[in-house]
Image 1 (cartoon, rainbow, N blue to C red):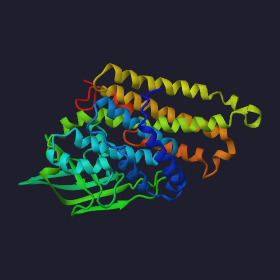
Image 2: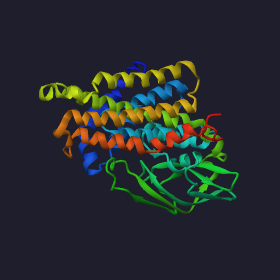
Image 3: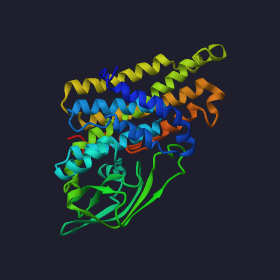
Image 4: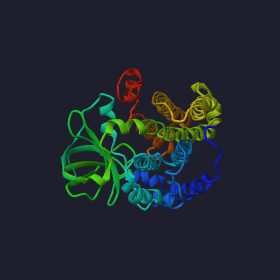
Length: 362
């Protein structure tokens, strides 16, 4: 088993079972945003991570995301967004944000997203930065468009990286209510329409110096990139476990014909255990997870999630092909895990181009 046995996680699991499970279908089919679940988790202490050691923080985030993904990957992704935003502040040197915004995020009173899809692709050599920043006396003016940022809403916050010039990029936190910021919601995805995902248009949005995470984003990204990648693996682990549960219920179906598919639950669980052991071994052998290892594990988790969701569909047969079946939902969720930043092609590119001075392995 990957994660340490932590009794305190039982109360989070109870919240997810009692409050999230009944909402899963509405989240998937109607795009309902599970705000009550996210806030209940915060009230129960699920997001209290800033005072933990690196290992304790990572294990807590992974387990929380994993547990949620067994019921609903949309919600697990939102938990990932929120806890990742918390990690931006907790890893920064910004005393103002640590004293004012961080406690609100950790309690769930305020929710947040990451806004780093485009920057992560920029650092991998895949895109140019979509936001620009112009320096003023007490802050920066931001312009540009971010196509997809999730877990947003009135009063929510999210992180951004913007280009000042060829040599400098800044990392800042942005309030969704900022003057000059226009949010346009996406509701046309094949799945995960309950994640409050928006296009964010910045028209001379002024950010004061006190919301800067770092005026050297290139350096700061190196401090959060491994956790950014690795904690996403929790989504895949939870989905895989839920898909295996479906497979196990169908083993004897149609006179045990599923054995001819050629992939058993034991095969999947062996592969999952290998991924979990890799994570466990990394935490035992290093103070912080090396970035290249985080990328490899994130890739393995995404590929195994895709494989398992497909096999679970085949096990269930026609019943799984129904629009409202759990297997169909998980197949769409697995595809999301494969394409959300960093997508499988992004991960493979980073592993191939290890000499990248920012996100490669040095």
